[in-house]
Length: 294
Length: 313
Image (cartoon, rainbow over all chains, first blue to last red; front, side, top):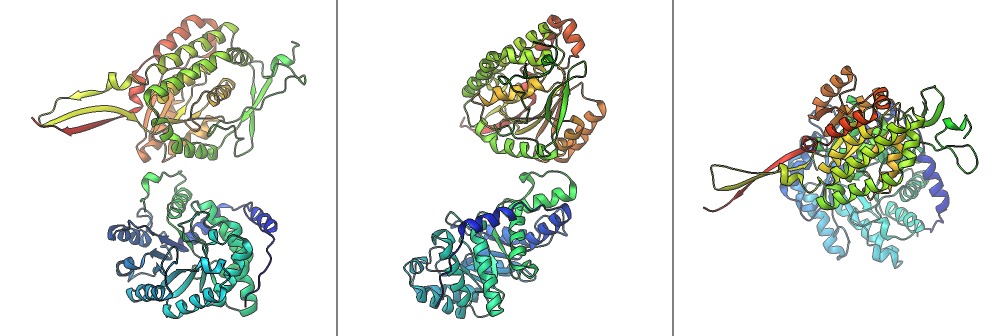
């Protein structure tokens, strides 16, 4: 069903290294910061998440930095299913989507029925986007059909909600597996493919994301369908974020430099982007003391 | 030594001894400047001695970033241990005495003045090493209050400090501003003397071998008028310490820019001109040492925390 495509790991690394040396001038940097902010999925996925924390995150999504009210708002807020209703309520009059992880996140170790229920619950609470995890155990045992069927059924359960498929690349072992899982997820109906849950290390890395972007490109060339990409976990600095944007632009072209086709899953990245933003506007290097903790 | 080699920082041009590149000291490493640019340090007869890094705001940015990160590693140590580490600086500095004297002489010091200054530096370090575990005892207090509370105050570090070193005395002036901050538990970014930077750069090598955690002391060289605006505008710097010899306009600018994040700003007196140093080294260095041996300098670069602890009657 899905071909195993050999990946030149050395070539990928080489390409990434070259992408990281692109010189970004001030004008482009400002545009990139603006874009990075608009592409962000502000995320809180802790067992300790309270209503208060989710409320604060949503307010930050609406107005990232009070002293500069014309800063763009982020793309989405990403929470656990039982916080979706609250987030949706706060964000209902805005353009910000509510994304929810589901399918026994982060391990995916449960029955298909429970996963489907999980998704239906999140959607009924108002989630606009569902971040599902694939069954890595099944994938690594070669049960590709099972993984494919799961994704396809969950896609159905999502209804009109967008489906992001988390591959958890840190557990897949090789770039070949990552490429194969990407192809499989896209065939099964993913709207986005996403690197990681953020719960295990290594999370998103540039070589992994490049392989996934190439899978998206090949999929587009053969089917004409534009699938989105979401790296998550481990992207903390604006500099990294800009390097990712360069990679997207050079692999997929300008169409993907758009929040509807590319997202950053992050929590601490937002503050760094804001700090760089304010630095560019005021000329003063900033301190984390003056930016909210979430 | 022939006449030409007199004027290089490396003593001779033979293969046994190669010229040294003087670089910044950031995070326990010796990186080149972000700009990759250098300036020429000259002796009094205008002959080239060495190339020294011409830093920019980006070097300040990097240094402040690591100083902030490292701060906890310094305050987490016991006061006693900090004293041991500072004392260790004196041990290593003392062992490199000849190198410092050599560099000072190249810059125009008389041999006698250079020796006296290095001796004074060792003495000052040992003096401040003793203060680490005594500041709380001397400056802390138990305060009388009109309620059932045990009320006490103690000193804590401020955080990241920007230090603008005087031109001369090139090493003693720097240590006079640096040591109280180290005792206080702060982490610092120093802008070294512009005209006489060699002893500051070599002092970085002393720090690198003295058990001082990486990032606690960072030393940047360059043109002060380029660097002072960046550091005084930086929102993550909590305190600026400089010398009274700094141009009035720049002192005013430091004060104004520091208002952005309410930095505290202090100017102390440690400056002695090279002429004074060379003509009356005994008197000037003794006076300078005397004024720098002031435990109140530690108090000025700390914050006071007062605790109200409930007690029963």
